[in-house]
Image (tube, rainbow, N blue to C red):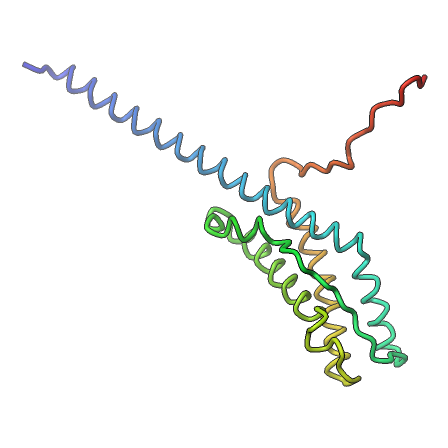
Amino acid sequence: MIGLSEIFAALLGAIAAGGFQMVSERRNRNQRREAVLTAICSEVDAICRLIRHQEYLPALIEIGNRIRGGTWQGESYVIDIRMNYFSVFEGLSNDLGLLQPRQLCKIVNFYAYCKSVIDSTRPDGPFANAEVTDEHAGNMLAVENLLKAITNLGDEIVQFPEQPLFHPEDLTPPPALGAG
């Protein structure tokens, strides 16, 4: 006959096992969330670094200043992007639900703004060979504002992960042979 102590021990064992499994699943989910967030933030960081390195924003600010100053001659800014710079975001789209709503909102806006800039500046885009119109000028000003929003959002997004993002250029090169 099974005694009360055996039933209690079995019940306590089941509760402990269930608690351990719940804690383990929560830890795994948090690790997955942080991994997804870090991967997306790394891609956002790379995109912002490329935008800054290619000096897209200063060029569009210059066009915007000419539009606002009345000296604009109708020049467009073309960005011929052929590669998919959003492969991490697209590949992890099924895991976006792991992220906090505030983070997700900013990340989705970032990518939507990037896609809008690509569409507005592609060589075969609506304003690539357009005649000078108020609509064309408005598009150039909109692209300028979108690039500002992209870099601002990107600067916020890269702060989301718990650990700072790794940047290869932050490594200190080893001393030269024979030095010092």
